[in-house]
Length: 351
Image: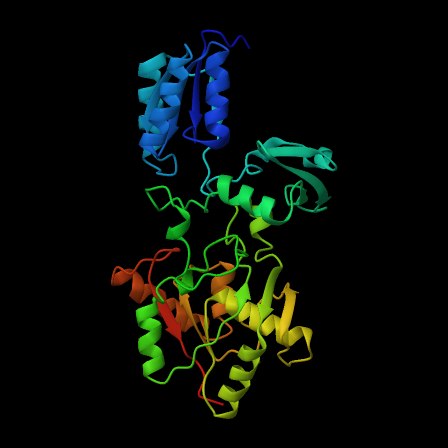
């Protein structure tokens, strides 16, 4: 199609791929309408395009809102006339450069070098035979240079139900340490230092581990069907001793979050039912058929039926009870999702 003079609508246009596409289309002479939730960021991109001599208009809106698309389309048509090109770059995952490859023949990417930042490339080394959008990549940098680039250009997962852009400190737990997690381990978010101190004063023993919490959703049904993906963990010797002493005393071990359950039970599964200190990776999937060997209960968010988190909860409580708890939470106005409320599931008596 002839681009010069035509009208384009670009969603997710305040940053990343969407902003880059909007700038390129405007440079080709198109009249571009940019849509995104972040009004300030969107305004800066529009200003840049206009300063370069292009035509650009901003609509601050959330395309994830089911009532928004009609208003967006009508406003865009009023600004530039009939839309001839639609570029959908909006994503609930935030700044994830490989996310827009929805229509790409991913098998052709094997061995390709992809630029994800000015100083950082990835080489595609592995492709899932069933889910070709699930890629294994090798970074062009390593060590401190890699971490510096990731912190400079990376962004936290941006959830559709959160209006404002998230910064790193919004998604870190108070006791966050090594940067292993891809997504916020949200069950630990309410555990402030003050609350932890109060728990300790009441006789609760605290122990730690490091776990690489993975994505809870990608937006791709084929990939979501196999979540959670394998996750890395590191179990300190002090934590192994604390758990053994807790069980010996007839007390409960409560995990703060589903990924902590997975790390502990995954470690036990790798070592014939015994916890062993050190690093490992687990692909354990936990559901109602699973019988926990290490964890007696968990602190977790409110998870809808059909999610892998809800499946895991069924190892600690029967689904009818979880369904009643979900109904109660909805009736009382509790919040689900990553920044919502948490619940404590203690199904078993002390050992």
